[in-house]
Image (tube, rainbow, N blue to C red; front, side):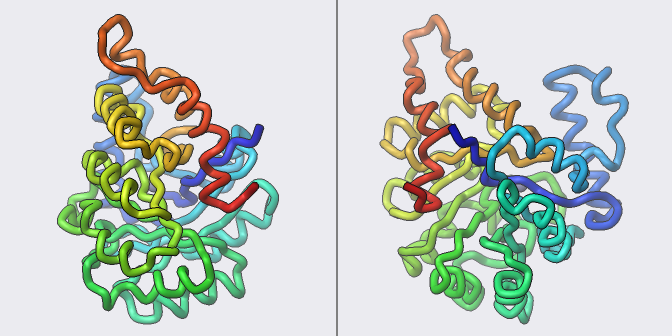
Length: 296
Ligand SMILES: [Zn+2]
């Protein structure tokens, strides 16, 4: 059985993340720890708490058979990982590691940078995040990178959903903002990260009507009620077969994400509320990625 992780990061402080953003990341993580495991575990956290260095990523990657990894070009959010860093890293194990590019569609030369990433660096997909990169997903002038991806059949992952930096533009983060672009490029294979949290139901509505739209389930298991509700909503609308396994490392490992999926129904145990069937969970783990990647 093959385990595929479609969403992991390579980036570390201070090389790729400026201090102001690292401080906000630390605060967000402290809140998460306080809520779950208590302050004792939070005490050792510092500005490196979101680091994913090659060594740290490599250790975590051993839990999956194939791992998609990317940086992020988001200067407006004070995050910038050169695509060369990702390309260098994935050469360590091209069987297990699949590097994707990140470019900012709002910057001049974005298509040329993407072309360089694909043709010269061997990267095989695109990561963007309008909320981090400050561009309006409904503005067709920002769609040239998607045109390129559609033409070359490159998959795209979009961070559409909330996030912690004070610089984020949440008006650009809402999933329904993507509808015109998705309708314009019906063949484009797209993953919305984190099921668009906390707008999961909007992503379910979009997946139902957009044939090549998928979503990953990373970073959801920390909030058990929302997670269960999102998965039951997806099941009710018949789109759980478009959900992909992902860790969002370093925010979690694939093992933690799998354990979270296995516990998705715990919050309603002993109640008459519906549960996500076990066979749907198995498809999320073992099958759905095949459809997205076109693997028989
Ligand atoms: Zn992520």
